[in-house]
Length: 541
Image (cartoon, rainbow, N blue to C red; front, side, top):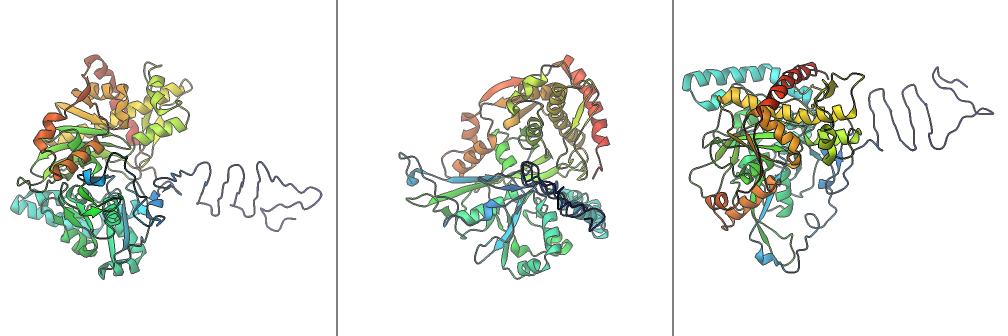
């Protein structure tokens, strides 16, 4: 029986049924279903869903969904499965809630969501900062007549006034990782949601605002300066949500956004712990907390965090820096009661570092991430193989949301060890690219680079960064600098320590890596080849 040109059915005696292990059903020209053991569903020519074993699911504490290469959302965080915000935390028997002087929150910045102001009901999953679905919207907006007119007006104002604020605005580019472009796409697809926002019925915020709302049971809707300054909607020069960008340019209401408060200060209290309320005394973005935890409290001190991504932050002191090279001026922290004002940073980042090494392990280049270095050291070099780590997007030196990841230079002599070494060297080269953007922008290079994050455990990567950047690289004894910085800020707001006291008591170095001139020459040659490989991967999607 051939009911359609593509369908072939043999009822008897040649009926072909494979209930296990591989059932093959072709009901339409495009549909291909294998219920077991690997379920594949292609309901349309373009959509692919792999529930198992390819679907990345993190059931606890946050379920992460990647139904397409571009989509990245966190679902479980919003499900009301507990009568109180998350499960009640049970303290050790020897610790009473009255002994806790403060609770701090530090988050990956720029993952955005919305919820009802009255009921607290979430209206959508978290849209992660790694989500790429708004890439086309981002490109359209950046090329739009409205944006070009805005940048031209700001450039004219800069020429008239000489103010750095207008210089920074004259090169404003929306980027995929910013909540502002995710909200533009969200409201364009849901006009009714925008109307509710204008009526003041919904709250829009990032992870920290949602967590604070839940922890305080709706009493506090706020964020801090470090988190607000990376959203693309905040003016770090005027220290306010930008009415020009939010209201005039994008036609979104300011009333939907949280109140901005000092990083170290009072954010209310939580009843999370049985036995009494606990004050929430700090909220910080992860990179600001890591910079503070690395004790980069003075101008021109620099740290790099090698975690999920690579984030290089340069303390610029008490003045925001207007970058022309794609480095983002952000607020590092504001301490309540500090009359000197905010501490500013410029930041360069790349989204794919730790996840690149995880992917290499999944592909079988090495048994585990901790053994990647051992595999890489079994060969003298990468054998002319280079890896471009653009699973999410390329940010520095060129922002390209359509860039792809890939190996280049693979040949018949390439081994898994060569590929493992190329993956590790890609982390080194990407850090160099960000540092080079800093040098071209500021005319400076770091005297000492302080490193933290899970990937900083690799001596191979640390030594490679020291060789290629020609500076000392310091790895602290506590690699979880983000959590450490959050604890420091919480303690300052609770009155336990001062900032100066923290700098004197907690400067602990595990190892210092010094540059080797002979190794630097080879890495410099390979870095130039790697830059050519990166250019080949631009504008792929």
